[in-house]
Length: 369
Image (cartoon, rainbow, N blue to C red; front, top):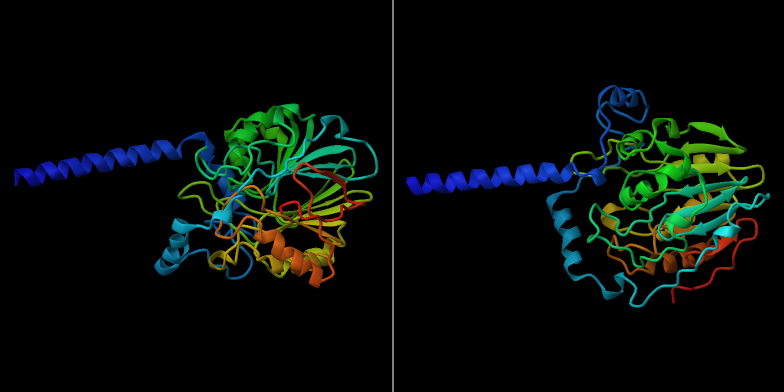
């Protein structure tokens, strides 16, 4: 009996240590902060909020049965070698002196995955600037294929606006915010993301939140927060506590659609009908799998979504920098190249760091080979 009590005490102590350790870890700053109090109550007025969490349009299940979880996890133990590049990939250096050319053109520079530098209407804008070492809470997890950036954050000129699609680690990055926050004029985010930014020291006056279909004019640019089919969350208990979105940016002569992360859904056509045509659509293409098909498009759907939003050309994004799925690192761009050709849809595939004019699109090349 005494031995049993001793074992029980040890188990209780271990459980307490694990619980306390877990609470400590989840309170580290990189996990962000979930909306609470009066702020949370204000979010509940959104048509996208059901009183507990934000929801997608239609019936989109994010829950997996036990068998599906095992089916998802099993292949991770034996991932293909080509899930990551076997040699360094090309990263072009971006000359900071060419940024913010005040002309009628709009220029884009891809930083890999879904991160972009956009020059539009004389403004310098960052889209989902993920410049940190890893797409995860800790640096040893999900590291970048290349730590080199086309331009180091410290060398950026003043950033007028930063736009985020949602709060997942491969899009909203804590180390990047720490480096950028005092050099950014304003942040535009979906509902709820303000909670993270405030927690990380961004001034309240520099943050504007938008709901789906909200629209505003900023310095000659019409910015619209549009729907996406995805989810959010940075910890264990905060799934879908903040909103996710895609974005429309329209200038006097240029128009861009930025998909963020999304499964294929009917709202793409509605976005095209209301805001199209677009000079270019930056369309999610990568980190997909049939098991999470509802929240990440297959490459063939990426091409069709480009048609739906009435894009003159598409650029596949959400690939080329992180290994977050089970396909080879080049499969997304290879499959979407075939699909876009069948639809006679021009495809833009710049090298990371290659700056281009969206009115004078690059001829696609297979740099990944």
